[in-house]
Image 1 (spheres, rainbow over the protein chains, first blue to last red):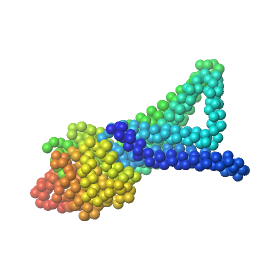
Image 2 (cartoon, helix red, strand yellow):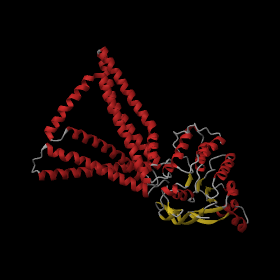
Image 3 (cartoon, each protein chain N blue to C red):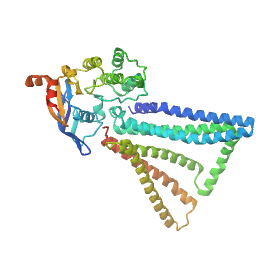
Amino acid sequence: MLVKLFKQEMKAKGRVMLLIYEVLAAVTLLIVMVGIYNQHVQSRMSHIIYAVSGAVYLITIPVLVIIAFIYLCVSFYQSMYTAQGYLTHTLPVKTTSILNIKIAASLAHMMLTAAVVFVLAVISGLIIDRTVVYELWHMLGPAMQNIYEQTGVHGAVFIGSAVVMMFLGCLDALLLFFAGSSIGQLFHRSKGAWGIAAGISLYYMSQIISIFAAVLLAAFLTEKYSGNLSDLVILSWMIPGTMAVLGFWAVVYYLISRVIVQKHLNLE
Amino acid sequence: MSILLECSRLTKRFGKREVLKQIDLRLESGHIIGFLGPNGSGKTTMIKIMNGLLTPTEGEIRFCGGSIGAESKKYISYLPDQTYLNMNQKVKDVIGFFKDFYEDFEEARAYDMLEKLKISPDEQLKTLSKGTKEKVQLILAMSRKARLYILDEPIAGVDPAARDFILNTILTNYDPQASILLATHLIADIENILDEVVFIKDGKIVRHSSVDDIRIKEGKSVDAYFREVFKC
């Protein structure tokens, strides 16, 4: 049943997400064509067009990623807390399973979006100017070695940590919205507005508490290492510390959503 | 006859407003029950609690002895009073969805009803009229072999000719061992098919009896009795 639900979720969101991926691909194709034209013509005008297109491309990609994120959030809200929720919550599945599946499907789409952006960027780079991509690739080894020498952290661990943090960051952002909208539906009027207000409040609350925790940690480390904090020490605390903070807030937002969906569902 | 649904001291408050007040109700299998009351009397709130869409403030509700949850939803077929389907889907997609999730859903019966109503399975839901969307939703609800059908205002949004079809659909597609709870204020249209009535007024059950009982004891039709009880 849960596999079916996951498939349905992926399918339901898939149509719009596919459209976003198609737009991403089309925009990338456009910049590739302009890049190839620029290489062949090499005029001042072609350089200007290429520069402008590049700038537009760099703006378009994050905008499309934000659109994808907003769509996933709106889709969650509609299927859980509007009239569509009548169907969602009358399925013979535990409410927590429904929530978990929706989180998993949204996260899968976010990761897929990141993967599509990465792959398109690499492909466009290879087509327009493969030497830059090869150079970047060759620079990666020495860069990793440099990181290891400076901090003692292996390059693979560093990249892995960055990927995990990106994953946790996406999960955090999604769950923040889910928790906010879940709080909003507890109200009897203007549920959407209350949901946004709750989301903003949760965000600021988490930022204040996280900064406070970071300051406390810095004070503790300064005390522990008598002011001789090396890059290695800072990094060895910063990476797991950031992951722990992201993970902690993800758990908090998840629990808020779960308790509300499970015990206080309010589809007035 | 077994007890399908049982509520005791069921109360629901929205803020300070008490919508349902200490409701005690027991529904048995094998009946068509009219859940009757004027607008704002608490019918829909009560139905939403039965389906797990709202949580009661106080009291208890049980279906076949268990609480409302994933298990009860296997056996309750619900038709809401508004359009709840994703409008970007085709009719056949929704039928596929119901087939996937409800073990008691009979696909052939759904397609048969669609054919009788001349609704194409390939139509996008958003292109259908409001009345046709309601018919699709009714088909989905009635194509299940459920133990309890809860139909919230199934005939409110359709023309009189379609009402006859809908009532006929309800009558011919439900298992006699099951029960139907029909919430409406269009009593004259459904009176003939009812076995029992539950009158709800200002969040309280004011009468729960058989239709024959009302006719014999009150000497009038359910519709006439309703008008008397709920006179403004």
